[in-house]
Length: 316
Image (spheres, rainbow, N blue to C red):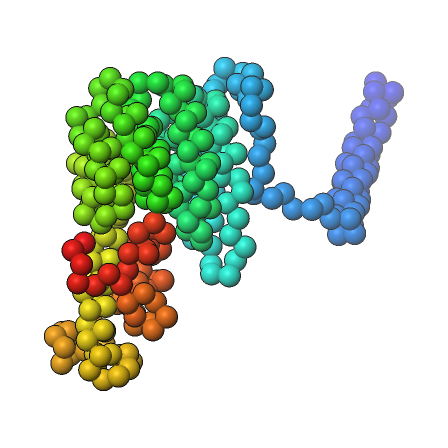
């Protein structure tokens, strides 16, 4: 009994000592870790990192979760494009991960239609609103067509990349013709190919093409993009009309106007606005003396059609 009581007393004495020793060791470890981190801090982990390489290894590493992982990388593609596009002026806007992310997405899920179609639009957007990589956009759509040969939309979209961003109307017509031969393609693709080849970048034919795409769009995003392109064509028409007034003022006064108010005697009423509500700008260095404001949601105009500014008095 006495021995048992002694053991109990020793246990009660040792417990606080051991607990104190453990706390002291823990505190020492925390302090040592903090000191180490302060003196030898690890570099921050960059957000723009690919945690999975593309190619044939990607599906094997996905362990059967290909579709889920494809969704993850598609979301990362959108985030990368959106955050880079919204970065402040003067920031280092690098879209370097956009194509690799889209490549991973479509490697994991070769039938991911939205990734091919939207991805090609993202890639084609000119800098700084996008990387301006029409070559990668075409390559992505060609991969989609290889995976789904009956998906006429991919050939159609490739034609638009050539038409709208490259100004290569012969290549655009060839892609539209290729799309028209795919089973299930709409009847108007044949006439679109002929019109593109005959009229090239004529603004009237451009409007016809985008109107057809708007009416046949199978999702809101494609429809919204077509609506934007139609608004850009409207802006070009407005700029032609304004350029005609600038020319009349210059001929009458011997100099270009310094403000929109100077054009009031020539028929202008108020400050001219584009469809986004942003004022157009007078710029003597721009074709026709008028330009779209860089702050407009319609900016930038596609390079293939921007050169049509200043053709005032001609039918759009």
